[in-house]
Image (tube, one colour):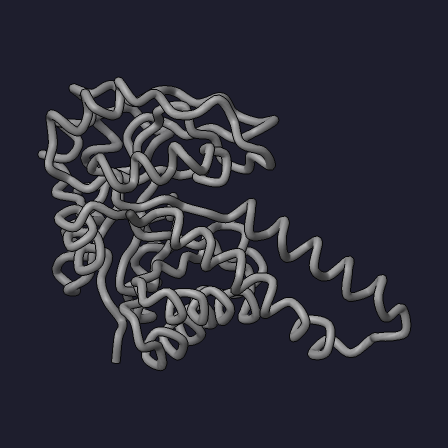
Amino acid sequence: MTRATLSEVLQPALAGGYAVAGVVCLGWEDARAYVAAAEAEGAPLILQAGPGARAHTPLPVWGAMFRDLAEGASVPVVTHLDHGTDPEDCRIAIQEGFTSVMYDGSRLSLEDNIAATARIADMAHAAGISCEGEIGFVGYAAGEASRGTDPQDAARFARETGVDAMAISVGNTHLQTTAGDGLDEARIAEIAALTETPLVIHGGSGVPHDQRRRLATGTSICKFNIGTELRQVFGAAIRQTLATDPEVYDRIAILSALHDPLCEAARAVIRGLRP
């Protein structure tokens, strides 16, 4: 059994100078390909079920799928609830065997975010699993604008919540389909100087790949969430499959053709977070 908590994979990453990919999953096919990629690279992996995934498939199903993949893997696999804005989602995820939950109180005031996140962290730790929180607000491409993380607020948040990982807003944006202008490395350094908590970058697909590697290997950023660039590979592969064989109609045949492209793309992501 190789299910691991978030802390169990991020603390070695922090000490070893690398980061772990938090891959956003939308179904069995992509999650399976990502685990195959991690095994091929001999690297830990974080499987994530975010709000979109949970709207499509109930949490207990995600819990069962992730548990099956993690227990059959040869590398440590974290099964992680991403962006749990409702404490009830976090409670259910813990009940269903997730090994890590992210409580997202980033839209709340600082005081309310700290109080709510601390409660979820206590609940997670009592169950023997990890908790991630977010300070500042990571916005969305063509949607809500980001609010950058204040380093002093980050230090207080980490200290008072007891989270195992802290997501920060330093120029990153969710759902970017191309690389952006890069992250604010000076702000990252300020935050890192004030806390020993492993840092997390959401919206990692929008970070230039060379900066991603540099930050993964030279700072306390230990987790990059990667979703959009892998979904783009999924979309391109399915279009290619249908164009190559216009008569194909069987779901299993179509989705099976996506495994190798997704696995190779995920392997490249994992390698890009290591020295």
